[in-house]
Length: 236
Ligand SMILES: [Zn+2]
Image (cartoon, rainbow, N blue to C red; front, side, top):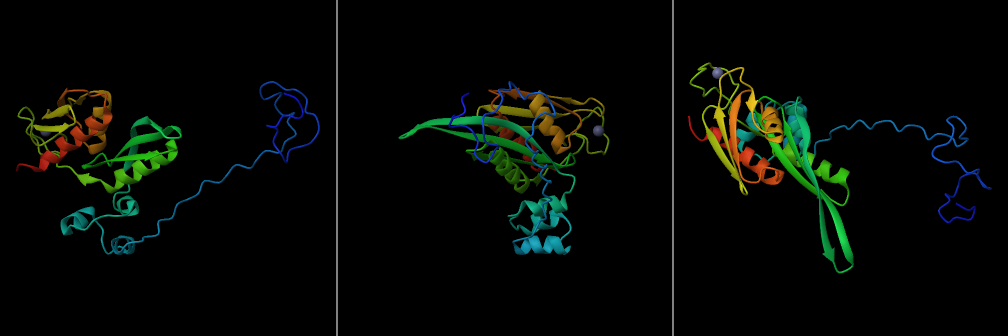
């Protein structure tokens, strides 16, 4: 690269630079290191009436909110009431389309959030930046967190613990149909990688599953899993 290269950064030391390939010899770079940015600790400031009630301790459980039928509009409410909630990126992808002025590229992400004990939510997000797509999806996942009825529907087990589904459930999402069948304690989750992870986040420990359709399509598969788990309230 010549000295007059237009890509040379302004503000740096002037004059010809010695040609160094790669990052050069460690310690010989005279450029001062940029100090590491301190991680920003997010403090939740409630914006809604419901948020303020949760923050002040007037409402202490998520069931209270769901029973009253109020809509949760802040992810902070969920984080406060379910502090052990974990989020996980289920799928990311690229959306490309032709527009009048060329190709546009955007990213999409699917994120699941669950406390591994009866709560699961799935969110989707799209953005021009991958990081923002994941952030949007995570917020959505938190807002979508809903309870799941766990139980023991296995005739081989017949215990009272919440380690499986209370009965066989079937759910659909797109072309994907998933069935979750109660299994005895200690069997583990018999499911494909990503379905298994979703069930773990929901709090299931033992279950058999069957899946039909295009299961690599995570948008359909995650919908089908959620549809299944919602059915756990349909009987009993
Ligand atoms: Zn059992």
